[in-house]
Figure 1: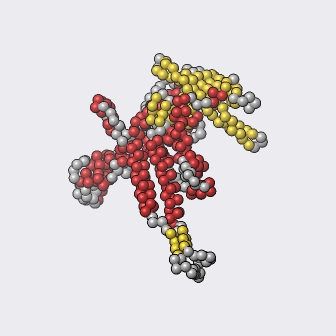
Figure 2: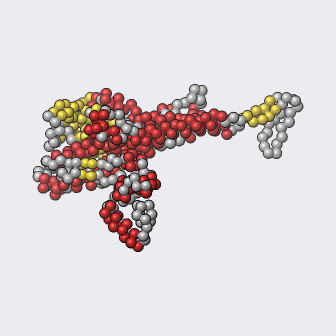
Figure 3: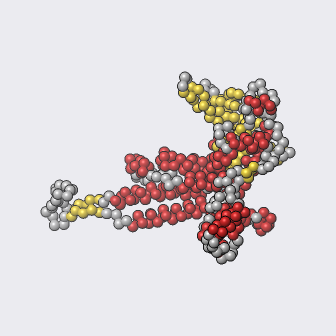
Length: 460
């Protein structure tokens, strides 16, 4: 039995969670932003409830944050994930279905990277199915029982404790929030919330007692053959053990600002497009507006006219939105183009000066994924060490002008082979081709269609 604190987020998680609602709304698009109401679209002073609701119902989110997250999350997986030669054969086989739901290591990795770039944190638990009566590895293989990965979102990680071991700092306790579907009646299902508590070599599941307020009862428990908690954190920008920061947080705030500013602009355009009819000194004259109608008045100072917006503020508002969009593009591009400030020693010894923020995130991601595969191996008493490598040459994606390469080749600044390799690096030439094969093709073309070696027909 436990009290309600088992379900509460730790102070560290509460601090990280301050921006998670905003990020979730941005990822949810226009419907989620509208549902949030005045959280991200404040109601103006003296604005009536009906007018405000009309403004909310017509506001549209430009999904820059979500698009930037999805685009950059896919970059490291634009090439197949490379596994080191030391990776156990059974682990390599399991990477074709990491979660027992059909997700390959590439697809599973993209899901994790989306969480990392969005919320700054996610986690993977390497679990093993409960299998009664199975005693040997041969029985496990026959029954198809094997370790698998479960992904936990940042919101599902409630808290943890760490302790020093011979291998460094490791988890000594972990609390995870889960929601499971159970049969309800003849055909329905019901969602049941539970908290999984993990300690080295042991796991427990707690569920809230429906009859006793704030009481959580032990529902199920068991032991583990692994001496440590088989859970691994994945980070956006790592700030500490289990602490991650969204690397695109500035872009998220800018996207909210754009949502608000575009709503203001839309409202201003609506006001400007509807002129106000102004009448003066008309007396008791009935005003009827129509193509075949006329308005008369006896007073010499009488007047009837439309008052229209000058439009000056519209142009200023439009320019402000365009400037904000430029800033958002620059902020999103920083992820793959910004150079990290490092010391001269680091530059000389590690080549850090050429690494973008995304490259550094991917390097930490590789280490986390490697540990996940090692946990899978440990479940079956494997001794070999897994190794994971992802694509990180994002500079090629930002300098992909083939014309500049062709000009450099024609001028003799680079060789034909370098030209070929750079085109291949930019996905212009298939990665399946080799330079030796391409030289043979070029030679065959020159035999049937002679041309200058450099820059002419038959040259690359």
